[in-house]
Length: 418
Ligand SMILES: Nc1ncnc2c1ncn2[C@@H]1O[C@H](COP(=O)(O)OP(=O)(O)OP(=O)(O)O)[C@@H](O)[C@H]1O
Ligand SMILES: [Mg+2]
Image 1: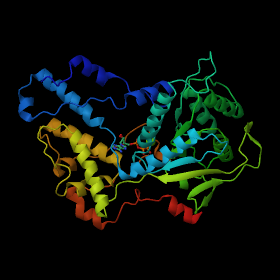
Image 2: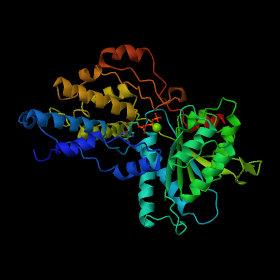
Image 3: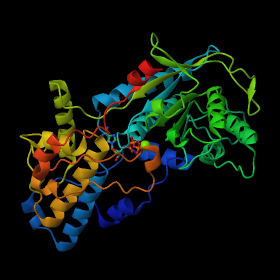
Image 4: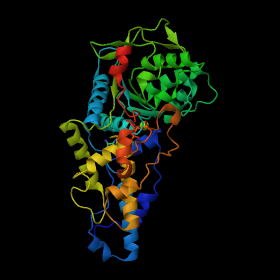
């Protein structure tokens, strides 16, 4: 059993606290360790049977760890988003002319992989950017200690306000920001981004800034101020088109971009704002579909990738990809990657606990996909309703009509109405 991790390394692996990505230290840790995961070795039931009880318990811990930390897979939907985000960040970062930088908005329903997809592209960009610059900021002032942070990742706080959003941005760099007014905060954000050489600013869960409050105009003004910063702005949220954030924008069907007209004021929150229009691509991260053969094949390929990462002792090639299993998993999850991940994780644990050591429909029928994650904001649409579709209830559910929560209501639909 030479492939087994030593208890000492395993303990380090499983007890390390995941750092939050929305601080410079946490983001850097995430970026640098994201490809270093060591999965449990693949063993047969016979090999497992020969192990001591202690080794069995360590191995089981390692395989659970493997199941709940599966690597990201390339899906056609994520690839579409990654390509666009990557293009915008890189082209903008390399632009020498004093041009206005287009931003990107990534929309999609909860658990569809928006955060994971955007963070992966931005991490890859940062790796490459730091590498070509010898890990120093090209604009660094000699003798200063400013961190070089080509990417800043900020999570909009639950029940966000313009002020708390700015504070979250400053927290990324650990900048003190107590008792400042909103204009002071905006000013400080602008200074911070410049001092740290930020090229791309990700504002995740931006739709937590809901647009039905007294400070709506403050929110729109804040967006306008951010757009004037010399960074690629990447806004990520649930149903961005329906959130009110595009209220002041118009859809340019020819360029397929949202256009924010120039501001009527020269300054917003004391910050000089752009006098040219600002453009944004709005891209929808969609779930898997199951109508055409390429769509079905893409889903099956994804299931194949999951299968490769499962460490169940009695599994076989095709356990998730053959027969009625793909259709079953589509029905249970609506093709949402995050829900699929949840179902498989819990199913694998049940397969280990029960000793069955493989997944089938009857085992998965017993698993209820639970979304009790306190870091997600149900009021901002971040917790999708889970499709009901176990084998036992299949006929009934189909007759009762479709759950439309996960339907694509992407930019096109909204653009037509705009
Ligand atoms: N391409 C992928 N391959 C495998 N797993 C993925 C992929 N994308 C996302 N996941 C997994 O799906 C889960 C949900 O992803 P993520 O948190 O990025 O979704 P989200 O769209 O940002 O959700 P929310 O709107 O709630 O913030 C995570 O566990 C993530 O690891
Ligand atoms: Mg997210």
